[in-house]
Length: 354
Image (cartoon, rainbow, N blue to C red; front, side):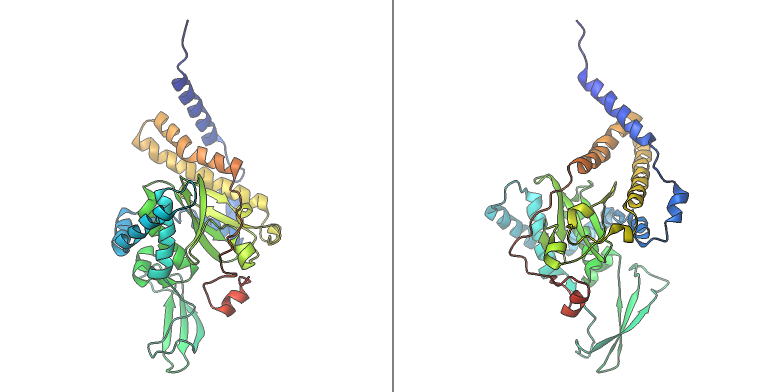
């Protein structure tokens, strides 16, 4: 009586399935994609497809670990672990919780507008913006220009994108907060795996997520508010209306709109861009990312192992997310109503004051 080698059979099936996925062509091509490049949301997706690359540089991660107060963080992590009453949380979840607290209260500062050297913090008038310098190691996108009404000094506030530079300046608005936070988060829990995600809201806010092994899901994090796992924070707590929320990790792009936007606060997506078009664009970039990883792996190991790794680390996580999704949680009652960062006038104008 012959015996079946189930392990070998399983590997053959996985390899065949992975090849099939790699051979499935996206429903749009490069020319179609270029024709949609004038749409702001599509342009944003394109500009963020490799946004996590800066957080994977080993030397940058070392600088991040040498900059933060690790003894203080881990002392409080141990306290959180001992006092924990939430089931399924693991040690790395406590690290994330403590990093949120440390980052907001001890490390980074919010900037409504810059202060003047003369001591005037209130009578600062916005005068416009100017382009970044030609030599731009801080990766400045624009420079906001202000003038002190008291001493007439011109004050510049550069919007920095280099996370290493942000470890030094330690201030900004939500873009700078998330940018710097993600570098430190990767340094503390990344382990070289695809565990962090940059999250972009089309209505001008960003936050992030990490994959929790204990909770077995992608967990919402907002470092500006020091908020953990509250995906309805923006709609139910801030009162924010949104159209699209897109998540970016190293190997995948995913539409997270259903996770973060309630029916009551949903802006008609077709007024921004047809959801079917967004789906096609995401499909195109995910196809490209899959092949990029496959091409790298093929140069490092044999084809079978490359296909098995692609299946385990990219295809399975993508499929799980498509089938299961993330259940929206009810915002905690102890979260203050409305956005806590930013001036009252600025928050009100953005429809985020609750």
